[in-house]
Amino acid sequence: MLDFKPPKPNTTAIQVAKALMPLVNRLCLKGLALDVDAESIARLKMTDGYPTVLAPNHAARADPAVTFLLSKELSQQYYYLTARETFDKGRFGGLRSFLLQRFGAYSIVRGTADRNAFRTTRALLSEDNASLVIFAEGEISRQNDTVMRFERGIVQLCFWALDDMAKAEVSKPLYVVPIGIKYRYPQDMWGDIDAALTELEESILPPAERKSVERYDRLRRIGVTMFRTLAAEYQYKVDETVPLDVHIQRMKEHILSHAERIMGIDTNADVLTRVRALKNLVDAEVYRDVDQMTEYEQKIHEELLQKFQQFYPDLERLINFIAISDGYVAEEQSPERFLEVIIRLEREVFGTSKMRGPRVASVRVGEPKNLREYYDTYKAQKRETVEQITLELETVVQDLVRGIS
Image 1 (spheres, rainbow, N blue to C red):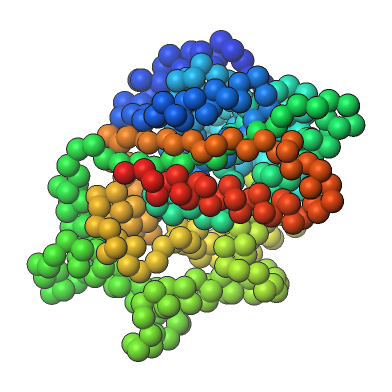
Image 2 (image 1 turned 60 degrees about the horizontal axis):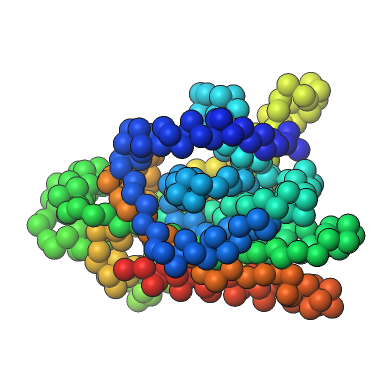
């Protein structure tokens, strides 16, 4: 198990970070403005002084920055449940980890029974009246209008915290707050979109196929060409009578099954659950502390890493395209949807994507749900109650996102 990164919030560090956000915003986020309506502010203030879990959707890499800006707007301090691998990313992993912990972030090894993370979350809620940010989708959807299925763990942790309160003979509310985040570009982005399409066409299409067509047809032509290239690579037979979207979903299954065969995994779960499980398995091994291993453990570790190399690009490809479907842009040809798909295509073709801006992050907050009111029902029907509330939160967040214009 990777070493746990506990939260070490430092008020001075947080205040300095908030003061520097305008500069960081310009340099790193291309200008990110926060749009929060009065009703949302009022709903967030309703939970002041009580243990609270903020449950936003996870549409983009900028979401943590948005929640940090939100904490600045409300003059509050949030804790952030953060994927363990995030602390070690980049050349300056040590500094990154140091700062994240001082800002209130703490780690969880996803897909495992991370007892340190569970214990810390329960303590923050049951003892400290803290406000926690947990992205319940578990992965970035990279789609403004799509909310992926929520993991049930967010609600389960809340009820465990209520169990701890009951043992301590403490009776107080514990809130879960559904939050929708949606991005828009306040300025004309069509020039950027056309330039991005041209760059992709030059990398994917032979010169003879770069005929002048409408913008959406250009995007779809790139996508279809990429799909056919991948189909040949993965020896996937394309039936021309079958709709493209069906092929996209079948291709995901085809690629995932290949990776699972390498790892000796056999499961009947849905694609999203299987991708999450495989990603968590890989991350848990990749980010292990080699210095704490014996020579034999290091040998086994290296063998596993070599095995992962056989399918890791496939896994990254699945994560990149997990929420994509044919017709997503066609049903609403907005700059935001064009760029969401372009970003995925750039990541596939170039290995990275360009951040474009400026952007406005609209945040809408749903009615806080006091889980104390469901505690008796939970004690009688634990699994059913957790699943029902998880589904309700997911539905509310999806409605909030769709309601943002």
